[in-house]
Amino acid sequence: MLQIYCHSRCTTCKKALKWLDDQGIAYELHDIETDHPDGETVRKYHALSGLPLRRLFNTSGVKYRELGLSQKLPSMSDDEQYDLLASDGMLVKRPLVVGDGFVLFGFKEQDWADRFLGK
Image (tube, rainbow, N blue to C red):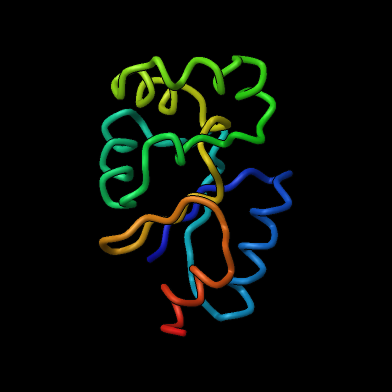
């Protein structure tokens, strides 16, 4: 079953959950703030996603801005970035969807339709 990490007040997460419900796709919901992936899991999800590491960050989040990460990330090592992502689920781009052999960060309807519906 799909695992989906969301934040209850995130409008993008709400859209993504509605889209999954509308398609009849079952999932197990996790609160990314309290039940976020640990460092080893973040590494695994990063590898499965095929994305650059910086794309795993929630760049529009308050925490990201408070920490000044747009300036700091370029000089941080991968290990430091993994540790940061694992330290606070609010830094992780959401929704985070984990399926059998794949991971999606964020909600882009066409990407999800391609993945889940083969469109």
